[in-house]
Image 1 (cartoon, rainbow, N blue to C red):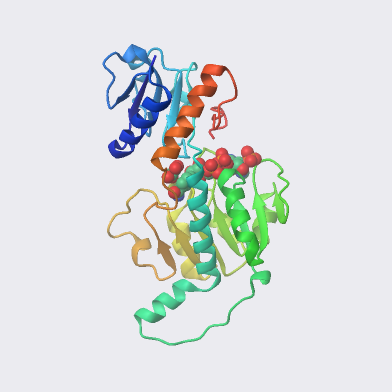
Image 2 (image 1 turned 180 degrees about the vertical axis):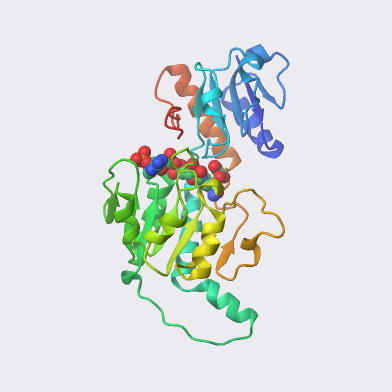
Length: 304
Ligand code: NDP
Ligand code: OXD
C-alpha cells in the first residue's frame, strides 16, 4: 500500500512531512512510485489516461482542488472513488473573494477605477444594501460560506441549487427563472458538469433584471464569453467580476482584458493550503481504512 502525490512540489514536501508524522509505515512518493502496483491512493490535479493499467490497485483519487471537473469521471475504473479537497481555507478565501467582489460591484468600483484612469471626479448615487438582491448559484460548501459572509451587510440574499435548501436569512430556489428575475448581483459557485456548462449564457443574462452584475468564481466553461461582452455592451448587464475563464490564461487579444466593465483576476479566489490539505487527505485515508464515510467523496454519476 502506498500514496503517490503528483502535484506542486513545494506543497508535496509539506504533504510528505505530515504523512511521515501520521502514517510512518505508509510509503509516500512524489512524482513517481517505484512499484506502481503498490499505489492505492493518488493525490493529484490530473489523472493519466491509462490510470487503470498504470495503477492496478488504485482505490482513491484525491483532487488537490475543490473542483473535480479536470478528471474524466466516466473513464475512471469503477473500483476507484474520487475525493475533492475540503480543507477549510478554501471556503475562508472564497468568503473573502466574493465579499470583495460583491461589495466592489455594489459600490460601482469598476466605474470609479475607470474614472480615475480618465482623471474624472464624478459622483454617483450609492444604493442601500437592503435594496440590493444578491443571488448565489450553488449552495454547497462555498455557496453557503459566502452567503454567511455576506449576511452582516444587509443585502437581500437568495440561493439556487438543484435540491431545495433551508438556509436562515436566505430565500432559496430550485426554479432558475424565478431566482434570476429577483437577482441584482449574481454569484456563480457551481461545479462544472454537463448541466452547468455554458449556463451563464445570453438567455440567462436576459432573465436577470436590466443593469444586474455578475461575479463568477466557478469554472470558465460555465460562461459564454461572447454573450457576456454582448450583455455588457448592450447595457443588459452593468459589470462583471471574473476569477475564471476558458482558456486560462486568456489570449492576449481577448475582449475581457481591457473591458471597462470587467474586473478580472487570474483564478486566485481560493488556493489549497499545504498542511490543511494534507490533513484532509490523511483523514480521507483514515476514514477509508476504518470503513467510515469519506469527507468530500464525489458522486461520480452526478459529477460533483
Ligand atoms: P459543492 O459540491 O459543495 O456544491 C455544489 C453546489 O452546486 C450544490 O449546492 C449543488 O446543488 C449545486 N449544483 C450542482 N449542479 C447543479 C445544477 N445542475 N443545478 C443547480 N445546482 C447545482 O461544491 P463547492 O461549493 O465545494 O465548489 C463549487 C465549485 O467552485 C467547484 O466545483 C469549483 O469549480 C469552484 N471553485 C473555484 C475556486 C476558485 O478559486 N475560483 C476554488 C474552489 C472551487 P445541490 O446542493 O442541490 O446538490
Ligand atoms: C479549486 C480551484 O477547484 O482552485 O480548488 O479552482
